[in-house]
Length: 314
Length: 243
Image (cartoon, rainbow over all chains, first blue to last red; front, side):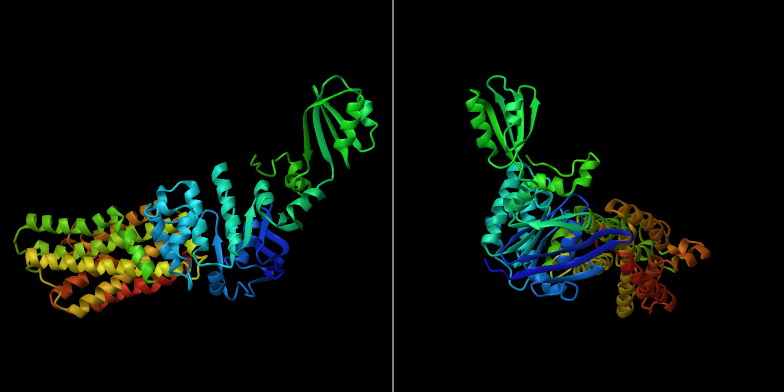
């Protein structure tokens, strides 16, 4: 993969009156990446990508997209960057085919509307008015409109919010398809599963600041090397047997179940010890830290308010 | 630009209410009023018939519906659903659509007014505006003044429902002074003078003069120009692309 940066953001700062929406955000996106901007609601994700997409003027900081300054070359930037926004719909009576032809007319070298419609599974909806489309179809049309100008970068904001699980999964497949076509994708989301599944790297933003930038797997690992095993012992176990093991840090009893946390080769050590004691671990489950744990760990202040910091898609 | 204009025309034609109130209704009213009022030449109308003084009122009726009802609600709706925001992500930007909407409304207004003038002539023998240049200047100035009012309504209304409400609240007094219920000639002097300071009151008076073959009075044209010049920049400054 080429390591050429197509988006560079340095020390971005945006305030609405006295409210600071984006305090200090820096990151860069390489060509061909699917790059996630992840964070709780109100973290400044949308404001950040609006600045990248030349839709909002930053108060301070430097942005470069495909070698262009969004503030000075907005029209040229919009030729090269396709943007899908939250809550940006079309007139109710505009038909799908008309919308694509209309948006195609805005660009120098548009994609073929028919091909795009079939790529997004909207061929049958060509003559349907926007107001009659389902949520998933509207979302797919919105993606089609973001791609009609054959952009080199696509900015997709909260793409799958409000979609049912099947439509969400279909949309993820589409995004992977877009990348196959060589488009760099900047994806705003607050769904952990989405970021884990799609993104090569994510920038975790909280309260207008970048908290961490890494691959989803590396972020998860950073949240803790701790593993958790849950099982139901086939017969009563002396807890001290488990406590005494080298890699075990805690043992908790939940009714008939035991929860053992620890590091290293936790599973092997525990199972060996149990087998020696003639105990079988039934209903065994192993949990590893994931992006969600990383998210919670890195944005813990939200947790302290007993607020759910994120929506879990599972 | 061409595709944008074509698309907006299609969308306009898909709104049956706009077509009915803006075009069909004034034509029906013209036929009905003409048939009901008969052929009396009234002294109060300077020897003209009721239909002669009423035809210009129906012409500005079209203008009022399109600029006070259609335009503000369309723009407000485009803003509310995020269409203007969506357009701002493209190289074309949302200001084009405002231009297209203004041109479209002005165009439809002019065409509908000409249709009404022609119908009035054909069916009831109402005089055509013989002072053609004066007539064109009048409807352009009146059109600009009313479109400025329309954008102002779209700018201050928080949503399409309010845009419709504000438009309606402006429609009735404006059309009253135009003479929709009482012809200007039958209003008292004070009421008529006040009416001539409103855009549609001045427009009707000016169109009547062009039908009598006269150049419209400078006072009427100045009133129309003043509305356009004063309100247009205010409206454009207040107009927001995003909700």
